[in-house]
Image (cartoon, rainbow, N blue to C red):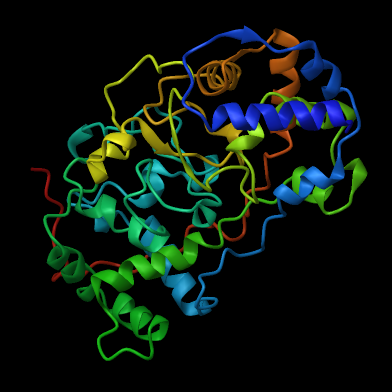
Amino acid sequence: MNRKLIGFAASLAFVAGCKSEPKTAEAPPAATEAAKAPIDKSLLAAFGALPDVIERQDGPAPEARVDLGRMLYYDERLSKNHDISCNSCHDLAAYGVDGKALSPGHLGQLGARNSPTVYNAAGRHVQFWDGRAADVEEQALGPMMNPVEMAMPDEARVLATVRSIPAYVEAFTKAFPEEKEPISFINVGRAIGAFERGLVTPSPWDRFIGGDEDAITDEQKAGFNQFVASGCMTCHNGTYVGGTMFQKLGLIKPWPSQKDLGRHEVTQAETDKLVFSVPTLRNIAKTAPYFHDGSVATLDEAVRLMAGHQVGVELKDPEVKSILAFLDTLTGEIPQAYIVKPELPPSTDATPKPDPT
């Protein structure tokens, strides 16, 4: 990539980091021109190939814990009415989403935010759109207690359910052999998180940055250059092409909907109004609809909105098409063998019954 492209990308990065007055402008000729240049391989250092497993800092989980987490992920008995599992909103056969703007939960109630993909989510800096959970282990417990989602009345109901099933008692003992009381609410989350850390989707992009020049097409390489030249790389970088920071939505041009104040609802800080965790772009072409409220149906529109509201650039049709070509390289392979739904252990007379209230 020539110096003109690097300079232009750097200037956009500066703009994206400043709270300027709203503006709209067509991308300068330099951006389109530079997008045709060869990829500057030094830029690839800002990204990274996916690991086989997204491990915790304290090391990999034992296989028994992963196997237990897989069962719990699919088990609808962890919901009040025995009709919702983690997989209901994060369908592993559909790139970890349900394709809905807002997911229906207990008694068909709709959540307030779009359900993001669970694939590669363990690599994000925080969990949930507002960052209220530190990791996937903590995140896994939230929906169980949410009255609009899985609606369990309390932690005791979750533990009573698990303890009523002998096969689960045995599985928890194997998964947490060092603990005097292996069945705990925290360990439910630790097990589900252990399974989710293996939900990794390697893609052509990983092969390319690993040295395989033929892994992506010339059109897609040009799309990467356009992605950089348009300022997208400022927030969408790293191994997960995003998921590394918080950012204000409507940084340059005010976002049309001010209803959801994002992280402000967690911190109450004025500076956190309309601030959200930047999503990963991994599998983005497969995880519509988009944004925290699921209000945008197509990736084409999402790219245009991001350029206008975050960078202040009105992209032309060929530029959008080029960026979309690059984003296709981030569509990965679903680990089919890993996500096979296991046979769940049967309930007993002691298992709490479904509660439709």
